[in-house]
Amino acid sequence: MNGNKKSPEEYQIEDFVTDESFINYLFSLNQEDITFWQQWQTEHPDHHMILEAAKAMLCNISLTLPEREFNEELSKIRSAIGMDAGSSRRREPPAPARLLHWIKPSRRSPDRRNRIARFALPVLLILITGGIFVFRQLTLPSNHSVARRNDGNEPVVFALSDGTVVTLAPHSVFRFRDDFGVTERLGNLEGEAQFQVARDDAHAFKVREGDIVATVLGTVFNIKKQPADSAILVELLKGKLKVESIQANGSIEQSVILYPDERVVYKPRSKQFHKEKWQSQYDLTTKIAHLSFRQSNFDEVATQFKSAFGLTIINQGKKKTWRFTGEFNNASVTTILESICTVEKLNYEVEGDTVFIK
Amino acid sequence: MTAGVWGQMAGGDKEAFLTLYQSHYHALFRYGFSISIDRELTKDCIQELFLEIWNTRHTLNKDVINVQSYLFTWLRRKMSRELSRLAKDKLADELRLELPVMESSYEELLIAFQQSEEKKMQLREALKKLTKKQLEIVRLKFFENLSYRTIATQTSLTPRTIYNLIYEAIRHLRESMKLLLILLFI
Image 1 (tube, rainbow over the protein chains, first blue to last red):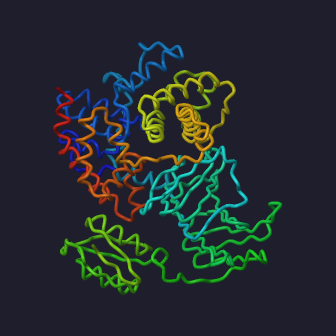
Image 2 (cartoon, each protein chain N blue to C red):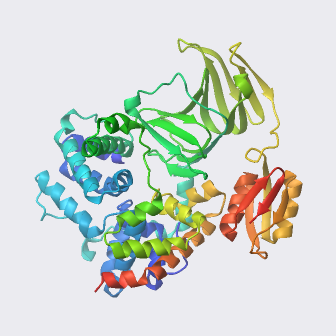
């Protein structure tokens, strides 16, 4: 996305740094963008200083080696494999006269690009919440697993190598094989996490707890454990989910496909599960609603929260007057509060059914 | 696309090898640096990694689907071996596999990446003025390299709002670091 209406000639440093096409060029991610910016640079020598400053800034905030340092590494590797360092380099700007098949860069048509992105990068949203959540029988060989821990008090967001975005709740551990995505996509979670799974039909995203396996078919779902392990609940909010129970020898005992508002209740003692209808209970993370704000002030936001979630909001923030615009589809209380607080630079605390804006 | 290039590289194509090097280098460096917080060590490990790939290309699996995952795995193993060796500690050697991939915060990494004490100090001051949430969104954009669209999905904000938040943060950093940028060109 190029959120900028300016043309590159009018760009300030921050305009270059936040332009996705420019980022693609600097990190060699997209050939069209590389070609465009190399060409642009040769045509605008007077913008040299600002471009270099933008590159330096982008390198600094993305922990990327500056071009000069990277080129040194590149020439080392070239000579190591016996390639003449003096021969034509791919990164060097092609001579303008040879640009016969000039392709208009994608940054010129953000709409078209967005459309493509929608098909090329469909993202499945998976919500997994619950108590302890361990794939006991998928004991991964310890020398091939990697752990991400969140010992802090805030959720941690990170991307896996396949593009899946993981939000790991406080005091949770996510383990995955270090060849995650190469052969299979299996994770191992203790605690809570949300997965925004990158679509990959060749490698299904599987979640296992005890004898239960949930295979993602494009879904938002919860996995919960009832007290004292008396039952495991797999609740589906959105999409389609396959749930199977398996025997010790790995053969499938029971298999069922879930649709929205259905859940599986599994009793480990009897090793049986059944499917039933369910309604999401009041819960900050699972209760969802559709809310829409248009230049709404605190009172309007509070009214909508009251009717949608039954929550009372008290404004204790120093900043009393703000207006928020945003639309939420099937969003949870926390999602909406997080968004408002991010935009308005506020904090919040929840106590029982009351939210304090600070 | 990279899967095809990988096959060509395994077949001995030097240009394909360089294409792989160029398209994966920055992500690998970012990843390696976040494990080691050591610029030179990370550079060395990546060079060794690529040389090993080139020297053993005939025996490598030619049908790697996710090249990036494959390279990350290789680099992670290499760096944890290297770090344990440097620590000369058997215990660390045994425990290394349980090391969280990223122990340092983005803020710490940014400061560590600066090469002079002066720049480190200046950046530390500049970062203090960003809110936690702003810094987090900047991290998602530039460290995790997510698109505005993906970050928007993640936070239930619009791509436009994400763009504006990042733009504001970058402008703030640029203003705070103005002196620094000027110094770069003296």
